[in-house]
Image (cartoon, rainbow, N blue to C red):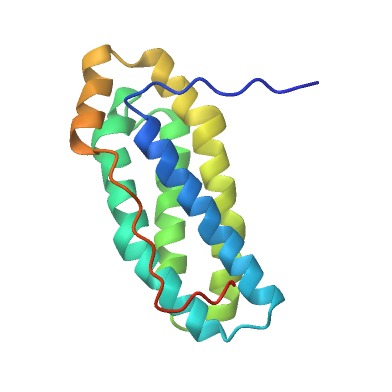
Length: 153
């Protein structure tokens, strides 16, 4: 059975593009492990990515997108719990290898959940003006890569 491409509302497309870069982070971590890259190098990059991209993305979702369904909605409860869990993993300094491994796995699952389920439900329920606000607060800025240590190459 062939899956149809998801038709993403234009106002949410910048958030979906963020997800693409986030999936690339997961790939970079996997690549780093397969190449035997020092965990601290991957941690430095993932810390930068978290501060520069993941946290701002989470804030936009939580402030503007998730209220469409409301904090008591099961899908939103799940997404918020995953955000909290991922933040803890990114901030973990004790077992970097374990945390990076879990980030790589759990972040990919989280993005797939948001793209395939949560965003679709939000699109169905949102009023046009709710979606327009999202585009206003999250202009589709070009992704700026950190090329100071491209450990994945």
